[in-house]
Amino acid sequence: MFDGLRTLGRVIVFDRRGIGLSDPITDWERTIPEQWTEDLVAVVDAAGAAEVTVFAWDGFGVATRYAARHPDRVRSLVLYEPLVTAEDRWDEFARRRVEMVTGILDGAPDVLHWVASSRASDPAFLEWYARAGRTGASPATAQRIWETVLNPRPSEQLFDSVTAPILVLHRRDNEWVTTANLMSFEGLQAPNVTVVELDGHDHFPFVADVDALVAEIADFVVGEHRLPPPQRLLSAVMFTDLVDSTARAAAMGDAQWKAVLDRHDAAIRRVVGRSGGTVVKTTGDGVLALFPSAATAVQAAGQLCDQLAIDGLSVRVGIHVGDIDRRGDDVSGLAVNIAARVMAAAAGHAVYVTASVVAAFAGQQVTFESVGTHELKGIPGTWELFQVLDGA
Image (cartoon, rainbow, N blue to C red; front, side, top):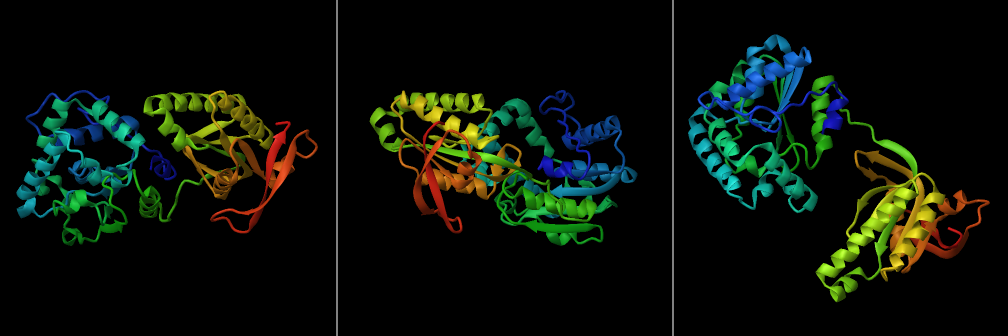
């Protein structure tokens, strides 16, 4: 999300008081949104920013208060899932929301079903979410913040007093919102307000289809749908996979198999690193890695097979050379899919490559043996594959 916003201009991000690295809240008599609005004023002043676009997903009216009170300093306002509720429904909404939040603070296991359903089963995201919660605020501070941020009524958020153009973004299947019946789009019909509904269930704006969200913000801010261009480069792509890993895991037991996998991962990172490659991600019992050349990829594959054999492990490897798109820490592109399919076609303890790898070795002392033409699932045409025999 931040990569996309950076294509539109300078991005300023800060921790509000009581959260993260900012100073603690000392005044609990004044409303927290008012104090957070003051923080926004201070940060914009300190950054020397002028005519800013404020992008907010706090839902408590910090951005609208700022825009209403400083109209000459706000170029536009982007509100993701704002708390737009009729005045006469606010008390009921606030009560229900406090009940939901109390459940979260008490460790309700289904909170991610509301706020990030598309990542609720992702172990890495679960670990990040738990860590972010622990470092964001102490349990006592979090409890007090949640108990106070919903006290101000909708009229105190000054939404109707904002003169700058406003973009309101809402995911139509967001249960965090619909469960409390809080959105009231009828009340947003104003000349300066544009409402856009996005697909998806997630309440967090930085998960699921982030590209669609960034594209709408770009269109609103600069007048065109704009995304961060992917970094395209030519690379040797390697996929690996342990052979019969399920049976081995069952025979060894969880503890012993975990130790084997730890050695497997360490060996992969060591071999790939020494060959000048980069581990993009592990796949449980395999890896996706990139190399600057076909030669280093094939060399690393041979070393990997030898090292894993010490643990009695057989590994299949697939390598292809082609263009990949790199965005952040991940990669995509047809070359990645081809390498994965080549790996799937390989026999146990074998390195299979495409003709693009063979062509890159012209004149070098490496022996390849054709293993025939194959149809690679989801990849057009037929592909001649080769097994690396020696010299790698």
